[in-house]
Length: 287
Image 1 (tube, rainbow, N blue to C red):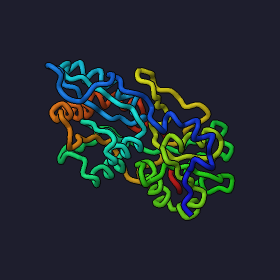
Image 2: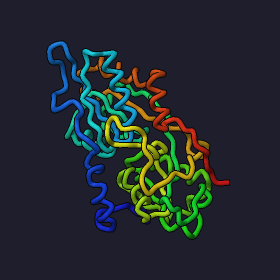
Image 3: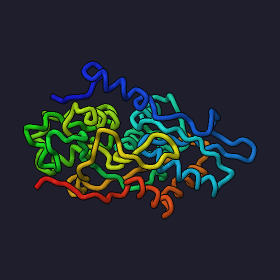
Image 4: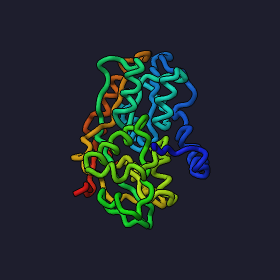
C-alpha cells in the first residue's frame, strides 16, 4: 500500500511546514506586472525554495550586467509552482526547477516554449537522518535494518527527488525490502522535516538541502536536528539537473533567454558549487 504523508496523520508537521508548503517568500521586487515600463523590462521568474540561496546571489550579478532588466522573482515550493501554472492560477516568464519531473509535467501541459529548456546546475541525492541518528544509518544498506521503521521520500508523482530516490532504491536492489517503510511526502521540505522531528529514521532528498536557506542574502546553513550521512551515488539513479525554461506566454522572451544563459556561466556555476549543487561528499551505495 502506498503511504503518503497526509494532513490527518501528521498535523504537527504540517503546521510547522505551513509557510513552506504555501511558499517560502514573497516577490523581491514588489508587486509589479510583467512587461516593459519605459526603458525597463520586468522579468518574472518563479524560483524553487531550494535555490533561494544561490539565485539571490546570481540575480544581483545578472541585473548589474543588464540594468535595463528588473527581475521580479518569486521563491516558492516547486510543487506549488507547478500546480499553480498547470491550473492557470499564475504566470511567469521563466520557471526554474530542482529537477526534470516538474518541467516534464509543465511540458505535458503544453506550457513550455519550444527550444528554451536548459540544464544549468547539477543536482544529486543524499541520505539524511535525525541529528542523533537513532537507527545508526550510514549508507544505503542500513535502510533495510529493522531499526529503520520509516523512510521519507518526496512524492515521485510531483517531485524529481522522489523519482530518482525510488530509482536509486530499485537499482541498489533494496526496494522490495524497504518499500513498506517508505512514506511519500507531498513536498521535499516535508520529507526532511519529518526526519528532523524524529518521526522517520531516514530521509532521501536533494543534497543541496543540507545547506539551503529560504531568506535571500543569507549564507549556507546546516539544518537543525538533521544531518546528512552521505551523498547517494549517481551510479544507482543516473545524474539529473536543475532545469530552467521560458514559458510559452512569456512577454519578455529575450530577457528570459539571457537569464537562462547567465545561469550557465562559470561565475554562476561557482555560486551553485558553494550551495552544494555540485556534489563533494562521500557517496553511499548498497553493496
